[in-house]
Length: 183
Image (cartoon, rainbow, N blue to C red; front, side):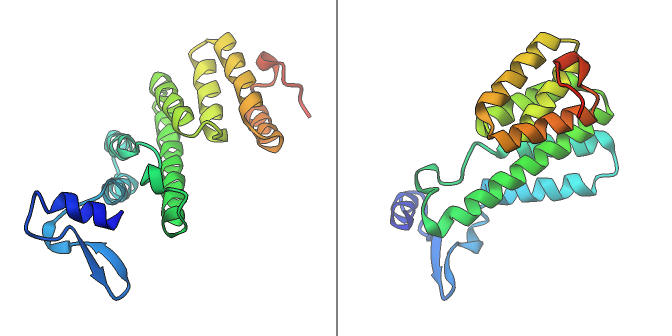
C-alpha cells in the first residue's frame, strides 16, 4: 500500500508523500497534506467549541459529510489499520448523534431524517440511526414509515440491540403509537 502511494505520488511531486520514521510511516509534514480523518477531527473540534447553534450544526455537517465509509476500504481488515478504522467509525457515529441532538433542539426533523438515513446506509446496525429515524418520522407525522423503520431495525439489529432501541423508544414516549407495550 505504501509502495503504491509513493509510486503514484512521484508523478506529481519530487517530494515523497509518505516518509519512514523510527516509529513507522507518516505523511510528509512539509507537504501540508491533510487526510479526511484529520479534517474530520478539526471540524469536530471546532463544532464542540462553537457557542452558536447554527455554527455548531454547520461544522458537524461538514465533519459528517467527510466520512465516506471505512478508511482504506480494501485494507480495513488488516491488523495495522483496524484500530483507526473502528475509531473513525465511532467518531463518525458520535458526531452524527451530536448533530441529531443539536438538530432536535432546533426541531429540524427533516434534517434529522436525512442524516439518520445516511447513517443507516453507512452503518446499517446503528441503534442510534434507527432511533433518530423513527423519532424524525414520528415528529413529521409519518407513523407508518416509522413502524416500517422499526420492522427494519428488528431484522437488522441483534436481539439485545433491538431491545435497547425499544427501551429508548419507550423512554421517549413512543409506546402507544408503535404498539410497544410498556414494561
